Amino acid sequence: MAFALKGVAYVTGAGSGIGQFAAYSLAKQGVRQFALLDRNPSTATITELKKRYPDVSIKEIELDVSNEGAINDSVEQTVKEFGRIDYALNNAGIGGALETTDKIELSDFQRILTVNTTGVWLCQRAQIRQMLKQEKRSDSERSYRGSIVNTASMYGFIGPSLNVPSTAYTTSKHAVIGLTRADAIAFAPKGIKINALCPGYVATPLVMSSMSAGSVMDNERIKVPAQRVANMDEIGDCVAFLHSEASSYMIGAALVADGGFTIQ
Ligand code: NAD
Image (cartoon, rainbow, N blue to C red; front, side, top):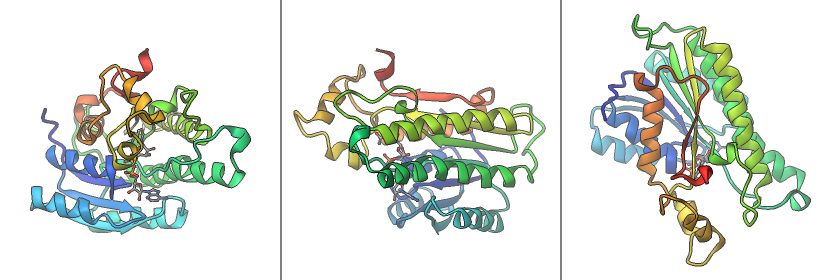
């Protein structure tokens, strides 16, 4: 699978999990300039990227995606360093509050929506404003001024399992698909491609640590038709695909990678 990606990537939540492996997949497909953003250090990602691809240039930016000013600054810093943003991945997100509505405090509900939904929208707005200023890389009709991928979830279009209530998370991810579609329609005519990625269960440290034998999460794993959770590199490769010319006619898609969970 070769996508020949050329340009600058901007990845939030780059310090761990899906963001980390998306950076590796983008580098595998040719990206050599990275802005890596996370509220925590992205040290592990940077070390591994440099080991695998010694010619990468990386700008690490500490960023909390609930901070509007810091997001706008981070886009400015990226453009100052690399000249443009070609491939944005708005991926930073949190889980938590696995409760039904009657047991969730307003502050917990708002915190999850602030990071998972408003954070994605703020990043997308800053990226769109930048991408509108930059030219397409080529005259090809498959080329865009820039491409944006938002990490939603399969819980962006289905409700949670009865035994794993997650009202706030489910709400936040449905909204990510909504803001992806709304802006995809508005900005496709202006040469910006925007899509969402909807993973099922992925073998990130957090998910794996909650899958002890017989646990509620282990029961969820057993329900996956593929009979396993996704490896992080499989989801990273989906990000590279959505940024590539192979997906050039996909606008506002919510690409599902869930091992068949949601079609049952
Ligand atoms: P993770 O915890 O391994 O990584 C998330 C990263 O986001 C962390 O490095 C964290 O520091 C960062 N982050 C969290 N809040 C932030 C904030 N306010 N500002 C900046 N950075 C912040 O989790 P992951 O599983 O890789 O999750 C990445 C995305 O994928 C999330 O949006 C999550 O909802 C989504 N997702 C995960 C799964 C799964 O099974 N792991 C499935 C579907 C969707």
